[in-house]
View (tube, rainbow, N blue to C red):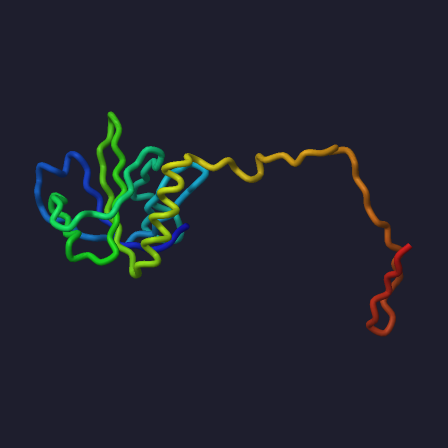
Length: 154
């Protein structure tokens, strides 16, 4: 999944400032192979703003009145958050989608990746069978005459 969303991040070091943080419109992309949620400045994917490892992350909807340390989530419609907690990082990213169905689709996809982990790349899956068995149909052909298809099967 990918698309533009309003987002704001809250890092452990920003707790001390207690200033109101502003929402930014970023291009967000879910990479299910690396199990990361990546925020980019635009569709060109030239500049990465941040990325969150989703395995074990907490994905939820903020409770009204809950402390959000300077981030206005009570007046923001269709809001959800992704919280990544590890020994080195404690970070919460808030998202606001334009519709309820968009929020539901994003939360479902993010929760699935957080629960199931990274997906195996499709090109790595091998098909069972004999890789040296090749069958082909040979067709005799002749030049086209008067715009009609001029191939005949042998």
